[in-house]
Structures are given as C-alpha cells and as structure tokens.
Image (cartoon, rainbow, N blue to C red; front, side):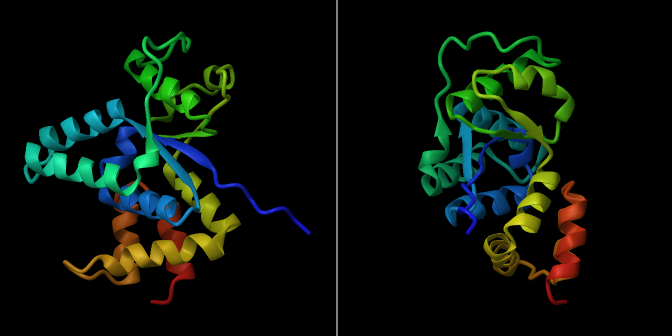
Length: 194
C-alpha cells in the first residue's frame, strides 16, 4: 500500500496572483487541502500595487478588498519572513530576496513564479530549506496528472463559479492559456466534458 501524498507547500510570487485564473485555482486547491499555499505581506503589497498601476478597473479600495478576501480565506497562508532578511545569494533581481526568505521561513518546497530566471536553481538549492522555482503551468499540470481525483473537481468548480459570463470548457481553457497556463488548458480540454 502506498502512503498518501503530502500536500505540497508552495510559496507564490506576486506575478502568479495577478491574473484571477491561476489565483482562483491555487486558492481553491489550498482551501480543499490539495496544496498548502503561502505568501507574505510583501507579495500581497506587490500584487496590490501592480493591480492598481496596470488595471484601470482596480482602485485602491478594490485591491484592498481582494487582499482582505485572500487573507480571510487563507489566514494560514501568511508568512512573516525574518527581519532583516538574511543572505540569499546573488539574485538577478535583489528585490526578490523577500520571496526566498519567506519561502524558507515557511519550509516550502516550491516557489511558484512566472519569472523563473529570477530564481536560479543552483542558488535555491543552497537555501536552508532547498527550493525549486516552478512555473505555475508545470506545477498545476503535475498536480492534475498525479492527483487528478483531488485536483480536477476543484478546477471544474472554479470554472463553474464563473457566471459573468459563464464559460464553457473551451472558453475557460482559452482563458487559462491567455493567463500563461497553456499546458493546463490543453489537458483540461481533454479531461473535462465539452
């Protein structure tokens, strides 16, 4: 008999939370206990600033409502990295040091990011808690192929909640592909009934 798989503990970079498609899936997976999702106040601040700066539909109040809803839904996701942040090595973007510090503090195994080049594998392997930078598309496809009974219903539930407008499987897959999740989109086109 095989031992049950532990829920992966993943730290999410702000760029992954920016689009609602990956954010909604990851949060639902965490709420269902499929994964353990972690973020920091620095990540949430970065998300809020990015939404306000780049999206005309996001006011400060709307961004604050989103962050509050996220923190209310998953209070255990918040990680407080040590201050000051210890040495993390030489990063391509030194502003990402807080991500590594918080991920290590939370004993995460993965940093989910669309900016893989910002987190060199050799540097992540040397951390007190070795980390792997993983593209969210790769991570979600891996979950779906290794833990389909737990993962597929969650993703389908997220799709069915979209009512303005409601999205068919094909339209939802297109939305995921547009959110830089093309492999997940292709797999869902195959797995979900049209």
